[in-house]
Length: 179
Image 1 (spheres, rainbow, N blue to C red):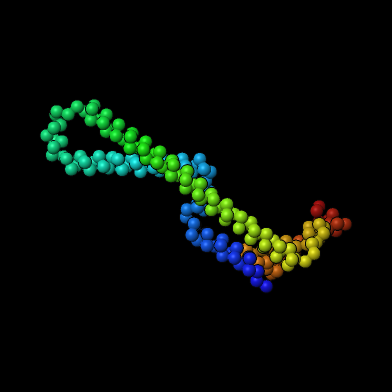
Image 2 (spheres, one colour):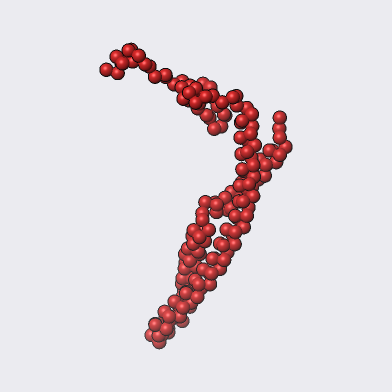
């Protein structure tokens, strides 16, 4: 018999997984500090590439003027301005990235808490169904001396895959075989 609550849970879990497969679920693999540091590192790399690309485009655009003034330039002053601009640009983007990645992690955790709550509830439904479907439990000796139950994750248990265990032999015949 179909349980409506179980179907709702399955639908909610599947919808969440499909919608947030590449953002919130990926974030769940990180600690907050690691996620923020990794995001800030990516921001620094992108900021560096962007800044020096803009500087290169400016130099190429003004190349004629720069060649005429190259002997009159104070190189230390130009390099100082470039480095000061670089540090300012990177600092601003680092702070921006830090805030953004903290906020993204915070909102992802809220969604993941609801997702995990639904998963736990769904697992309880499955365990309850399994307990109702299983026959009475075997004794410890029967469990050890019986068969190894092989489970197929997709299709369930397959009796054809059960492996019977051999009982240890005792007595004079067993002693002769060991010698």
